[in-house]
Image 1 (tube, protein in one colour):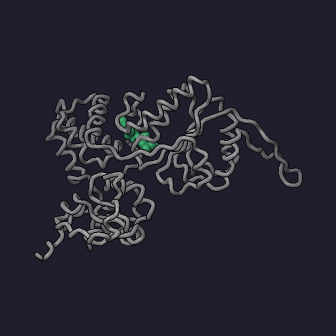
Image 2: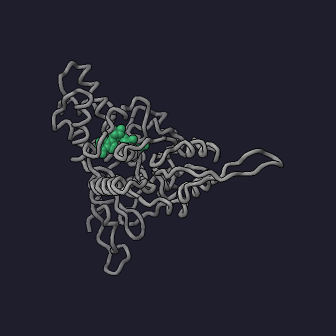
Length: 375
Ligand SMILES: Nc1ncnc2c1ncn2[C@@H]1O[C@H](COP(=O)(O)OP(=O)(O)O)[C@@H](O)[C@H]1O
Ligand SMILES: [Mg+2]
């Protein structure tokens, strides 16, 4: 058997930035990360947000379901069931919440898990909701336990207990609420308790977008920004945006700046390449942590690596790896999930220049179904 080729080492993303390389991934703020899918100051999220289901590209099954549930609720004049949106950041959870509310013609109140410190903060919002209104709680996995438990009776029986008076005279009264719809969004569904999750009648998971879908999103966003873009340029941006509309839009905005600074009337493929090179985005749109994950898996290409080991080796939380990073790496074939753990997928092997390991012998559990869901 020929000696295995030595794995190629990927060049660091920001070769001159010593500081970034010196700090551990865990202490680095998300803002340092070029392709951070979380919103950042300067993201033009609002104006680029689709305003109807028709403008919302991709996630076909989720959109079809939501259209059906909202139509049914409207025809029968009953408030919609509570909805939980799960998926990596930047894929459209907040956008879908807005679309559901506007399709229902409902008022939407927005808050987020970490902001609601006490049940009282929640009570104030709940008692103001009208029939059929939407309460949107972003990062719902970060609700404190006692606030979460306070929500249970609101979600199920549409009533809450309000404390009145304090000390020896403390008592509480039960206040009825209008029938509202709670929409929760989370990147970490695994952190929600089962009783909480079970109270959402509708649960939808968003998956990373295909390059062709992102291309349509980039083309539409360019139109909204008033800057024409060549098809090939949109394709270049789409391929490197980690399956994430928010990242695609952010790349587009910078590439547009490059075009404008150069006095160009439209974004060409060359401008897109130049802009992305200036941002230090690699050909695959992978960031530092993606590369660390691949590097760990490359150390023993034939052996599956468990999530815990991967977390320790990369210095990132298990949940973040599983729910923020892996979905894209799996969709693109860089990583494959097997019954035993993670291994490099065909594209991961190709990227790192590693020969595929020999297939495991028949009967080996590694031959069992390989996370076909995303293959
Ligand atoms: N399917 C889509 N079609 C077009 N634009 C989208 C789509 N999904 C998301 N976007 C864009 O990406 C940005 C991030 O979406 P958002 O709903 O805030 O993501 P999340 O709440 O999941 O983090 C939005 O401003 C919107 O412009
Ligand atoms: Mg959001």
